[in-house]
Image (tube, rainbow, N blue to C red; front, side):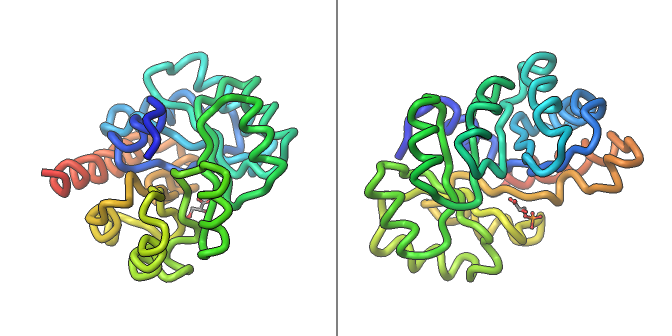
Length: 214
Ligand code: 3PG
């Protein structure tokens, strides 16, 4: 288990909004809308040209939220997100090149795992907190429980097909520190600048986490 403070922030929040940002101007109101709903972490995915600007803007202007970079798949992107101020990095899978770059960057990294072979690589390189991706498509909680047999030291952030409807199933597992998902920040809510809706979705999720954790 990692004791990095950023990982503890993810665990404490319980839910990581996975966001796709097309226009960096939405970054600050979006981050503030999440905070207003009780979610103080955000994963900005590198899936659009605006992502690095968005990440940099959030890191600079909304320091209350943990700025996480997602969909990081190359060493060059590691350098880019570190420069932008990312405080942690998430990848959909594992590569030696990104592992090396992350070690050099000195930031927490959650590589993606979905199979026992992936888990063996994560354990052998000391990456003990992983994204379980794509969670539902890879078999959901049943697969997670099975993987935890041989790999009890791994902790997971299941992402992919997670929603308000099934997050309790994941968070009930002791090996799950948090879940990730895009449901908190729908594309149409961003397009319409509907920050009240984002806050409402964040509040529903954060309240559910609080209830689950008692
Ligand atoms: C991710 O990259 O983490 C996933 O695309 C998020 O999956 P979801 O859209 O099913 O939440």
